[in-house]
Amino acid sequence: MQTLTYANNDRMPILGLGTWKSAPGEVGKAVREAIRIGYRHIDCAAIYGNEAEIGNALEEAQHSGDVSRAELWITSKLWNNAHATEQVGAALKKTLQDLHLDYLDLYLVHWPVACRPDVVFPTRGEHFLSLEEMPLSATWAGMEACVQKGLTRHIGVSNFGIGNLAAISSSAKIRPEMNQIELHPYLQQNEMLAYCREHGIHLTAYSPLGSFDRPAVLKKTGELSLLENPTVANIAKTHGCTPAQVLLRWSIERGTAVIPKSINPARLAENFQTLELKLGDREMAELAELDCSFRYVHGEFWTIKGSPYSLEELWK
Ligand code: A2P
Image (cartoon, rainbow, N blue to C red):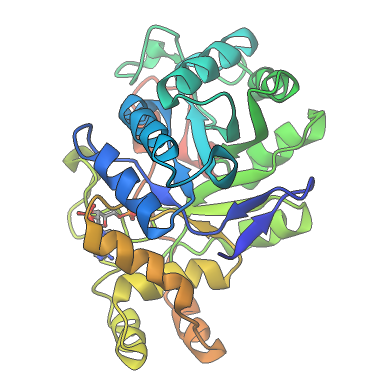
């Protein structure tokens, strides 16, 4: 499989399995099936609430000889309520315990947003900690300590704008090697792509299919559909493939990793077959025209009344 190479020559499979919204009771089967198909990169997060079941599936897959730990690339993410330097290692150890692993390949700061340790999802202004109270540099120091202790091989961030990325990079001993962000033809983030290429930071595209199965509170009326876009449909027709495959291949052609979520065996296989597809320059140019800076995961839940965060600061 095509891979993204890290500074120490570790290689991350460019296509991974997303597990956000994969419910307990479903996610284990999806992980087992994905590994059987050939997926070797699984994207997880503590907040998805399903790491224990993923851990059982990973253990079974290794015991049954389907795959070895060394062949797998496992990513997870630090939740917003464990941003203090000394909390980061404890949060990662809990994730490792749930995933039945000794180490992660990649650990990411999930959001550049902090909240109180006793709060999972802030519903009031006082649930948040501002970045003055809980600086990202303190969180990053905890992440670096995790690398030094061998709990994770690589560290990075998620949902960071260029401003926040530059801020932690400037004081980092170990620079972030990944930014996992929403990326698809409606949200191409070309400035971020250029910045990351220049600074040797990889990108992973989340919500590459538009995350139609998001909870209703995260949806807005009249949202654009990626899977029903006519340009995407025409390109799919030319190749005799599906719109989903065109969307996933768009990410791979741009040199970014991509983590479509599915719990359906046929769609898991369909998404994996994207690796066989190739898009031409003209098709990439047509898809480039679709950029309209449209976010499915808009981040407004971090900017509720009384919150110290604003969307301008978040995405800047
Ligand atoms: P399912 O899990 O039933 O396959 P995203 O990766 O952008 O978050 O999108 C995930 C959503 O897209 C889920 O609703 C998932 O449903 C659906 N999905 C995954 N793969 C495909 C595909 N190849 N074609 C259409 N829908 C898909």
